[in-house]
Image 1 (cartoon, rainbow, N blue to C red):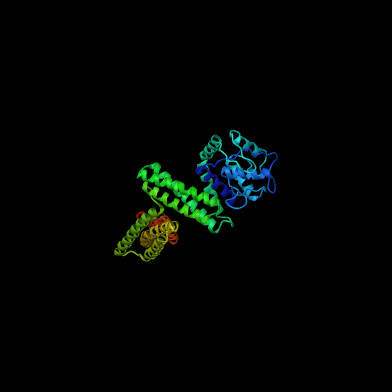
Image 2 (tube, helix red, strand yellow):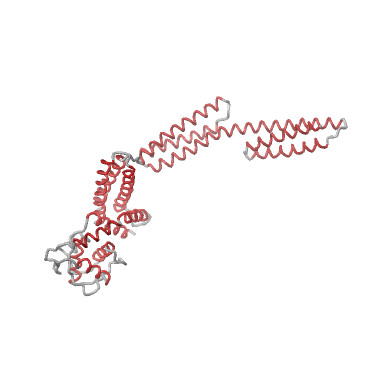
Amino acid sequence: MFKKILKILFILAVAFIGFKTEAANCSFARDLKENDKGEDVKCLQQYLNNAGFEVSTNGAGSKGKETNFYGKKTKDAVMIWQLANGVYPAEGYFGAKSRTKYDSLVSSTSTSVTSSASTNTTSSNNNSTASQASIIADLNNQISTLKQELVNAKNTTTYSGDQKNAADKILEALNMIDDAEDAIDDGEGDTSSAKNNYADARDDIFDAVKYFFNKNYEKALDYADNAYGNAEDAFEDAGGETQADEVENYLEEVEEEIEDAELEIEEAEDDDKDIDEAEEILEEAITKFEEAEDAFEDEDYDLAEELLEEVEDLLDEAVDEIGNNQDKEDAKDTIDDAEDAIADAENEINDAKDDDEDTDDAEDLLDEAKDVYEDAENAYDDEDYEEAIDLAEEAIDLAEQAIDEL
């Protein structure tokens, strides 16, 4: 995983910092692989170093200290060269495809590089420019791939320490650069200043990439920090709103929502409504809000946003509880009224019976009223207070119809 990230980072670096002078005219009469030895290996190392695909930054294999041994560093450098030049599979084996690509890259040069690398060389400008243009054309795809690889790498056990810190900051900077670019495209702020800061950010990020590839994670982190800062400045200059700005505004909005909820609860108390449960929920919301403020101070904006969302849910619950309690009281009163209406109807029917009146239809309506009354009580027990009110009112109507039927 991490090797793949290094490859992508280096390709990005090559795309922006340009190609160095390419050596030419090594003679490759055989395929080369890891552990091979020979002057052709040494010439390959010289070519790679001069072309910008350093075998090593210091010691054996570095520029001027090339060796005739095809070791792991040579294999990695070949692998990256293959990726940059579209040679697949890019596995570090310098075979027929690689030799053909090498020949095409150096065929137009008139200068040569001997196996001892004692002769100065001139770059193959046309081929270098063409190769560079090809990579730059694919730059946005490479950046997207890089971001995904950095995200995926966070789940691996080998991704830790200085490597992790530098790679994380590079990823953050790349995201901020994307945001800055979007803000500049919108063109609502000072785009002139934004573009200057954006250009600085791009320079910094590819310096970060270069040092990251060379495993100088401290410098990579420094440049990534600079890239992030310049990109953030560009974003703000262009009229963009940072996550910190968004969360700060969110805090203000939720604080107002808390004040509104407190006012509703106070008004409910003035109306002699039961507010005990609503007050408990409100206290929980206020505690969560204070935690969100602490997270904001600690610059943990994601946590702050999550907490504020929880606060809003609690505030809705607190306000709903006020209305819920009122519905509960109304349901209880209506059910009591239904019970009284049924009792009145029973009395009237009994009196009619004593007078030998026909009460059959009235009794049928009364039985129906009793059934609906039971449904109302069940709805109340299920805390469906609106349904309980509707059913209780229906029971009252039926009881009254029973009396009218007499």
